[in-house]
Image 1 (cartoon, rainbow, N blue to C red):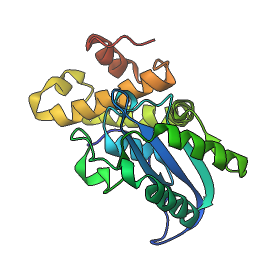
Image 2 (cartoon, rainbow, N blue to C red):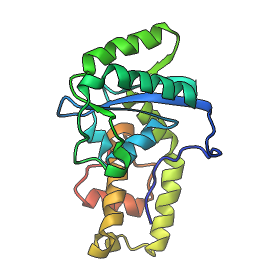
Image 3 (tube, one colour):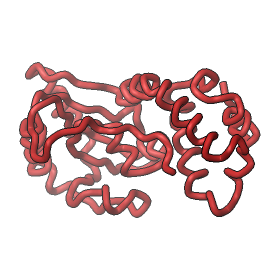
Length: 209
């Protein structure tokens, strides 16, 4: 059982209506960034790296919102063309199936600041920093997080010690990544977890506000 992840809204294949975003995700510890488009940048960040809230510098990350997927694609393709000389390999620590081809850049941050200012001047809505937007998204998932946690406890028959079984290591890792993200970006977990799971998280050496 995988734990809570954001989900993009259900859409017919090839649908191009509805808001979409061109996002810029700078890495936290090197001059490298990812450019792409998505209906849900939070889900994209999660797909790229389980510890996305540490791997990316979300206080510098931003996204521009447009009305249609084709507009986002056009903006993204124009960026790729202008930044071609800055193209760089994807880092090995992101999931290969989500990394994309030709979507990572080194030394492009200053130019992207100019692009962001231009988009804003053209009337596009700029979400900046993405840390604040991601936090609001995660806060909005509070009830869903609690419900999924209750379902997990039911599967474990209330025995949280089972999460330390090596056979459940992938589930445990996914759970900790999810809870750590909520704690890092959205703060208080007290009202978002059943008491038994909250206590297990505390015992794991992760202070809960």
